[in-house]
Amino acid sequence: MGQPTYPRVIEILQALVRMDTTNPPGNEIACARYLADLLAPAGIETRIIEPAPGRGNLIARWRGTGEARPLMLMGHLDVVAADPEAWSHPPFEAEIRDGVLWGRGSTDNKQMVAYGAAILLRLAAEGRRLKRDVILAATADEEKGGRWGMGWLAQNEPEILEPACALNEGAGSAMRVGERTFFTIQTAEKGVCRTVWTAQAASGHASQPRYDLATYRLARALARLGDGHLEGRAIETMRRALVTIAESHSAPRGHKVDGLLARGRIEEALIEAGLSPEGAARNRALFYNTVSPTVLAAGDLDRINVIPATAQAYLDGRILPGQTLQGFLAHLQELAGDEVTVELHQGQYSPGLESSPDAPIVDVIGAVIAEEVAGAQVVPWQCAGSTDAKHLIPRGVPVYGFIPALPQPEAVRTGGAHAVDEGLWLESLAFGYETLWEITCRYGEMGE
Image (cartoon, rainbow, N blue to C red):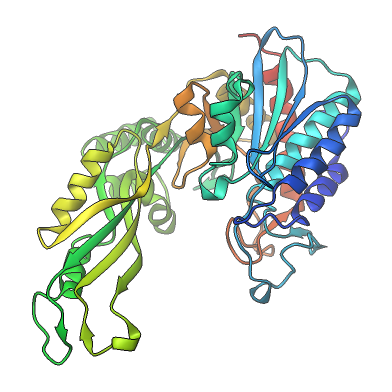
């Protein structure tokens, strides 16, 4: 694999984390300039693109021979908010303690940017020309939908649409099922459909409650959602994942899981595949359209004795690939009933997406993982959230979520993405970097 360069990766990641790119406002331009100043002197082509003031994006490119289309490594520079009072470690100091690099963005998603920058520098230092160009896209605004980042680039920069495929966030963690280790690679992600539910009725004095209050109407409608898991089914990515895991026990077990999924018996299939009850519960949402009521609005505290005429709820929906907007809204309206109207909230809809698990990059990842972790196997997986892949897959660029990460030992306790005390275990950082380096080099030497 060549000489490891973990210290350089750590240095780059610390520098990125120390730049507060909380979105809003983002201010990713500071990170973009830092990366350009780092990469350009090594002979790496760099471009900074700033579609709005402060919203900086970097495209960096190490030229290969051009025999095959490029590989793109993509990561976002913006982060979600962090309350320093709630953290055990300052969120923007990137301090290293107890074998962990602590800080907001250390796992979501500045580590991928640091890996990509270090890989480009290593290619340049070795003078290594692959058959493919390697592109690093470090982008703005992913946490708010990508309007000033990958969304803008995909519409305005043809270079972003050149790659044969892209490696992104969304998966890559190790998962233990029984005695076997599986690494997930994201080949699908759920879409987003956010709605507002509105109930209306006559107002009145609070001393005179009625069955038809707007608040009661809304509450009854929300109660029909149960636990928010709606219309379950196994998309091809998750069907293949569960069957593969089950087949690691025995071929008949894989066949049984396939049959259970075909009959919609999802919870039984998860357990039969070998997942623990906790693991089954954690991954159940990957087989359902889901909705979560996140905001409720009715009345006025200064008029607590007045029955409000309007009550509203805002729901965050996550939909499976293949689910249409019209079909999902119709199903929600059916559940809500005649007392409540359901509408799309401010156009916040994007479809679920799925890339084929049968792809050369997936084969390369599987081969590298099998060599690095004895007995480990790669399985396709779906991301429950939404990533910048939504801007590329509809335009013909397959995107695979794979940031390799080792399972943390019990003694290492860090927060993950968006959590308090977000941190990256340094042993996992080293593993992730070296694994991505090997994947980049092997795929980079493949022809079309």
